[in-house]
Length: 483
Image 1 (cartoon, helix red, strand yellow):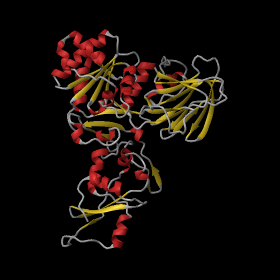
Image 2 (cartoon, rainbow, N blue to C red):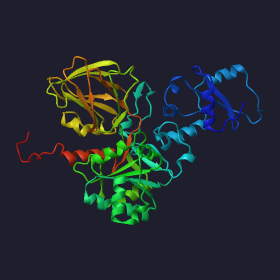
Image 3 (cartoon, rainbow, N blue to C red):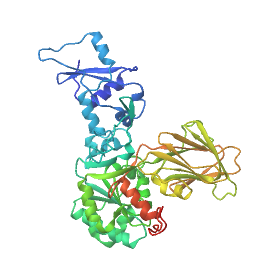
Image 4 (cartoon, one colour):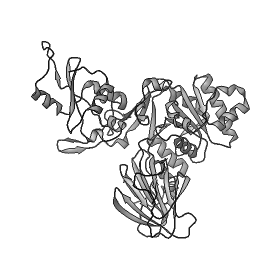
């Protein structure tokens, strides 16, 4: 049997083999007999999905010191092929892509097929891992469902903090700013100069910002930008880190620029509320220095992927360009005086008909935005889920829902609807929905990683305390009646 020493070779062989359930590849490397096995389900998804299904490996058989090479009999080979063991070489590759704790590394955040090292020149790599507060912590749980002495334990991954560690030094930073602000413009010029002179980094800015910098001084001629949408779509292959100067709206704008993978974002607060902007600009040098050195705590903020399917479409796959939202997608009645009439489905199961001003489908990051104003619950941003919140429903019993992240939601405008509906995505890109049209939403595979000042939970609680004055009341007097 041939010796296979590179994971790509295994992938190519599998692509050209006629596979059946349980079929695998048997090969010998470094004196060990190894076997690979994939089920049909393992190969049904995208390449990134296949990487994510890979598990840890075990040795199948090790040659004894006196054993010579040779083929094995068919019975032995058949037994080995049907085993679900994984080789150490593949496990090493799995850890390279996904990390020991099963999250993902930089390559998994690539859009589509993996990008080779030669194509990623100048791009820093990193790994993400789960962090627990000590070995004795209650948060130190199993990564999968397991059965121990008749008891079931689960991952509870939302209770764990995610840490990003750079494997190579970041080289390129994208600085995005809130427009029409003199204070932000001054800070941007100062930050760009510091990043260039002190950190020797390449800097990208928006075309508008580059013009402003060059108007101020020709010194900023080194600053790079882009010319068209095609260059924007390739930014994730060049940029290691994004720094935003503004409020939550600037973070939403930064996320909307990346239709696929998103580099880590360091959000500086120059807005009003700042649920996603924990860093203060007064200490930007210390903050960026700490982030560039790593490791840093991050929050993976989930996004929704939305498709509009028109009534004239020939099938459900004939959709308009997908739109990614970080906060929410809203379906409302627009300027019409009639109630909206929306039929809602969850994975082909009928949920309800919405009769009211509209409906909000929100991420957990967006739970403190429009959904909160409409009566939805505040949810920790690292909890994976989709919020289903009605807007002024004409009903006394229509309470908001929180649905699991793996479902697909479909909102249909029925043919007997009195008027059109309107969909908006993070407050923009408004689209009209006519009777027969539908909006389909599911969780996007590309989250938005934002750096934490402390950790995900600490930053979340600080934001609702300081931004919303959550549960703030006068303390009860201690000198009253006692029981």
